[in-house]
Structure formats: C-alpha cells, structure tokens
Length: 357
Image (cartoon, rainbow, N blue to C red; front, side, top):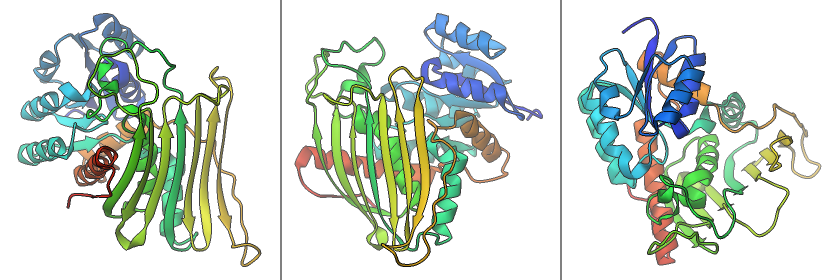
C-alpha cells in the first residue's frame, strides 16, 4: 500500500462528503469516484482534485491503484456493490442503512472475514470528539450508573404533497430502512446507544405513522413519525420519538433533545437549526446532583454538529492500517441492524418484539 491510502467512492450524492474527507486527510487521497450521474461525479471530482472519474462502479473496482472504497449508493442496490468490492480486494466503508435487514449485514460480514479486508460501517455521529468525550465521561462514572436514554429528533426532511426525486424513491418505501427513523433518526438512536456503551439490545416496542404520504404509488409508505422503546441488557432502556414531517415548528429545520440519565447526573445534547441554515444553537451539559444533594456541575461544551465525515475517513484509514478498531465494527453494525429489524417488526405487529440473538 502507498504511504497514503487511495480511496474511491461509489455514489457521489451522499458519498461526496467522504470524498471531501479523503481529500482533506493527512494520510488519504481522494483517488477516484463513480456515479451514473456524470455531471455530479465530475463536479465532486473537480472540487476535490480527484484523479479518476468513472460511470460504472465496476470500472472503479478494476482500478488497481484504489486501495479502499466507500459505497454510498441506495440500500436496494448497495449490497452487491459491497460484495464486489471485497471480491476485488478492496477495504470497504459502508454507508447506512447498512442493508435491508440483518441478513444483508451478516452476508457482508462473512464476505469481509473471508477476504481478509477491513470492513467499516458508517454512523458518523460516533466520530465527533464531543461524543467520544461524553462516552468516556459516562464510562468513567461521572453520572453514576446510566439507566435510560431519551431522544427527541425532528428533521423537516420534506413537505406535504411531495414528489420524490428520481433515485430517492427508496426512502419512501416501507421495508428499506428509509423514513423518519431509518434515514435520519437512526443516527441519534445509535448515538444514544453508543453513549450508553452499546449494551446488548433485547426487545423493542414501536408505533409508526405515515400521516403525510408522498405522491409515490407504493403498497405502504415509510414512516414519517416513529415512537419507540428499547430494552437492553442490565435493565437499560432507550426511548425515542423521531419525525420527518410535522405540521408545526415552521421555524425549525431540525430539533434535537438527547439525554442520558444516570443515578448521579445527566448528559444533555440540544440542537436547533433554522431553515435558513444561518442560525444553529447547541449545548452539551453535564448536570450533576439530584435536587440539592451532592455537588452540581455544569460544563458547556462545543456546539453540536451534524456529524464528522472527515473523522469517519480518518477512522476508516486507521482501521485499515491496524492502528485502532473501527468506531463502528461489523459486530456492532449487526447488533444495531437486528435492533432496527425488531423496531420495524414491532411497528408492523403492534407487539413487543425480541431482538434476534
């Protein structure tokens, strides 16, 4: 391998952020991109000094100078691309959702183990330094025993009477891990689970609504609202409500409230962004003491961001070099997908569902 890891990205709409991260990295090079939308591919390439531009992803995989590949296409076509990349001898970074279901992730994990190549999954909130710091504080006992996480996340992804653009229809079809939870909310469900130390998910109960269907003609639309409760090992629980369309909050493009509750304190994350994008406010606080007991402490930390794609590429490169395990390992990605499967099954059955072992 060259001194710098040469990274290729398949799918430039979402994967463009990875290209930027590879271009900015000290030990990575944004070497190649592939996208059927050649205008987009060339635009991303020119902005990031990318050496080679392909249309068909298989042309990129045939490039012997590509060391590693990020696959950021839609999940209904992504799995064969990931498997082909591993067969071609490339290290692989997989965008979320990591598959249609846990069986997809199991197949990918098995292929990676056979290939001997590094496999990393994407959940970019894990790479933010403040999230890593908060996780360490919780693990060190600063808030006592963490017992519950509560997450509220609203993202105004679209309006009503919406016509999905070509190539984005999968987001609005039930069963493809799009919708309010799969597309955006899962980042913050994963963030809460990560901050808690990734306890073993055991069961899930969920309700969903498709109150504002798009113009897409489908048997069942993906959810635009999901409310859920998850039980984990050790009695730890996670409660979440997430939405993509709500007939209120006209002044907010997103609204996040995330709390990790402990027996001696709470970690809070708050963030609101206006539709103009010109105003973003965020706070992270460590709150200690119950009522007036004990020592209270408040620490205002850095403004909440929207994920660290550059950090994700650094994590990918470090895992390839064997310097550290990835922030999202194949084993954790499988556990989380099994949790998502149980959540969506519960939303269909109306029953509490067990998370597959």
